[in-house]
Length: 190
Image (cartoon, rainbow, N blue to C red; front, side):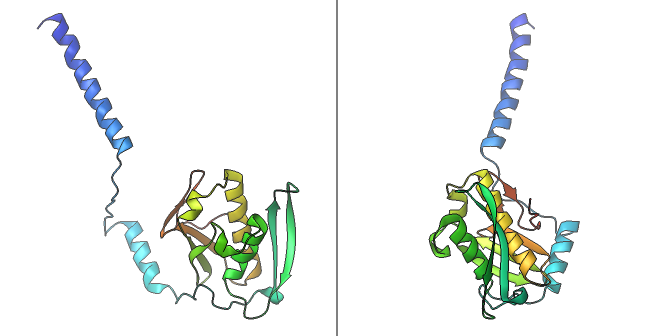
């Protein structure tokens, strides 16, 4: 074998490997298969079978002392602000989102990227599924964290028995240009 052929073969192999890696990175598979016998599948099916019925998106909930006290980041003053709002006994789950939307965007919830597909209470958890507009919004990383912190703190601190908040977008993981929050992992306020 000539010297040139010995050189060309490794180069072709390396180029082929690089092309394969590039294809995997640029064109990832859209589907994933789950082994039905995996521990994750067993956990998710047992949770689904034992979950109590969910309350509707705006079903009335009992806020502690008919009040919602919450902290939010105010960009104008560049500081955290604490606010307390009295609510009636018919206030629904959406009330917390409405308050955060008004403070962060100065608009009603329905006119903000925070407008959810659904918000449900299942046992000791609240699950908020946002529309895809939340991922396309002009929020920066710190604004996203401030928004999720304010939302989770409203529910964790003002409704007895709520111990976990879950976020998703269109039924999938909460993924934006700044953060990834798995839909099956409770959000931890920062």
